[in-house]
Picture (cartoon, rainbow, N blue to C red):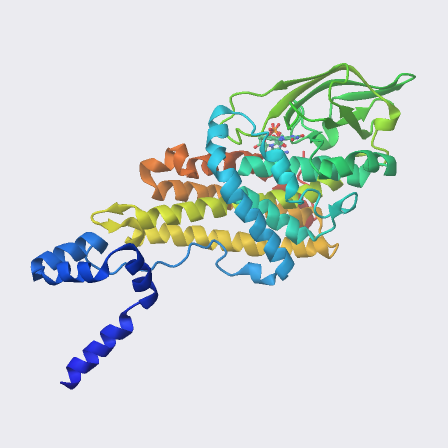
Length: 449
Ligand SMILES: Cc1cc2nc3c(=O)[nH]c(=O)nc-3n(C[C@H](O)[C@H](O)[C@H](O)COP(=O)(O)OP(=O)(O)OC[C@H]3O[C@@H](n4cnc5c(N)ncnc54)[C@H](O)[C@@H]3O)c2cc1C
């Protein structure tokens, strides 16, 4: 008798009355109960199986690439901004990236929406910029790249390389003219350093020339790989002054005579980013459009130091996106009657990915702390760029591996991360060049040729 009462009590406790109430508004409960009471045991079992597969659903842990909960170090305001960007990327960007990636086109409709987030030029003070920390800037780069590395690259060129050149090397008038409009993304910028024959050796070997004349500066030569250039309103061109041999920066406006841009086609990575091959044929730039505080390559390097840290964060985002996609897939995909995530060898892949991802995250957090403390050195940024882009290559490739054939299909996203990681690995200084920077710093010997 007592056990019957206990069972009845337990049954009563397990009833979700709220759900029951909702259900009663949709169906005639007494009638349904009457029908169920007429079913025999076999029929009841069949019905249960049909409704929930015959066994209670296993609650799986949430998918979270931030395994060490690093976000807890953020203020409530910064965390809210991170989540706002994440939400925007998941709902506004994710649904359209594969479409544009496949077509090698840029989704111009996203620019005003990105601008609304008010995250452009995040660390700069004044000119409409938010004056936030480098850590926050890194987190934003990571959040964007977590969904798409092309959009992160477009944004990095605008907010970092182009705006950063003006912020660090421009006169007050130049900053006033460009930065507020670029912050609102009403004007788009590009950064032209690399040339068809000069990539890694840009520090000493630029061949684009600038000659001062009565008509202004005359620029000649070519620049290759310049992100955003096919549609940019302004492109920063770094050129060698033929008189003093020093590298100077020029604000070249869209449509300037003698400035031609040809879109680079056939890329297998970052296909949404529009890269340009620029030809300068006696392109005249007025003295007012020469970056007034860019006097040598050392000034160009200051911009690169700023953005190289951002590329490390971007790599973390790309790796995070691939890891979370792969984890989700392995929990849903079944083979031999079981989710593949329950296989030991698959879990080994996932744990290796997460270990590397967590190491990368902790490294970039510290990198940004150094930056915010004004202690960032070139070798710090280079080490992070090398480590994170190298590990990202490994993570995206394991993500693809655990997804089998579907890993190479664009619709599953990881194929895009896999391809895009290749470009991030090479731009803003290759592994070799960044390793040489770190090597010089720790040994005291320069191995640059
Ligand atoms: C998608 C994409 C976007 C880009 N966007 C921009 C942009 O917006 N603006 C811009 O200015 N540039 C941009 N770049 C250019 C990028 O920064 C260069 O590709 C990069 O610096 C490498 O130069 P490179 O491609 O000419 O390779 P190279 O310099 O020719 O190098 C080829 C190989 O030789 C190695 N190597 C070179 N020198 C040494 C050495 N001394 N010791 C050992 N190994 C060495 C390199 O590490 C590399 O493995 C972009 C590139 C890509 C792919």
